[in-house]
Image 1 (cartoon, rainbow, N blue to C red):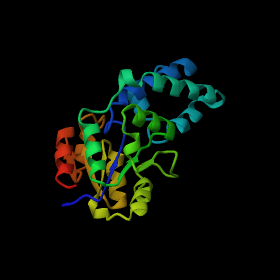
Image 2: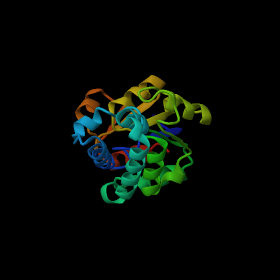
Image 3: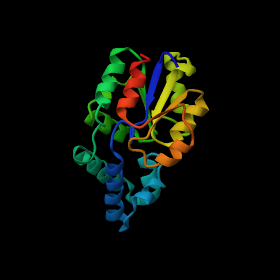
Image 4: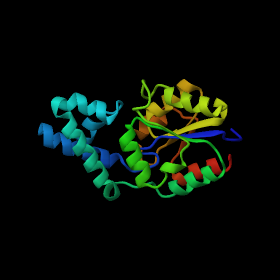
Length: 215
């Protein structure tokens, strides 16, 4: 790939160190409403649907109250538990300055996506934000990629998705774009590496060098 036409980022574990915040937020509400202590592994197994879909299934008629508590805890503890990985903000600014269309494709819901992107100061730099609330089929569906490709009339061969999970790899492959796997904080690092992405980045610096040479 000589030139990038479009770049799509996942959020959790890619732009931000939010994994522990998510675990603690889920633990907080499951302890409070179900009197259960979920492990990180238990919570990872829930991933796929948005937080709201998961909570509706878990809490039933307590959903509305639990939902308020979830986002209150998530927002209040964000600055204490999560931030952009060093160098990510500067990379986003660089891409935006080069006028390369930028998108988010995440399984997070719209509310938590906005909270995180605003907290780390990059919300306004994205030309499109596709959350789990904005599509019918979540990753590995290519739906969140396709809407970006179509809106900006991009060549799939010159568009890349940067994400930390196996579903990101599958979503990119299902849509016919390139996949760059970020494994600096991936909870499924070994599985991601084993899948053989087009590009593999162990540090933000490696990703920065790759993108800087192609914008």
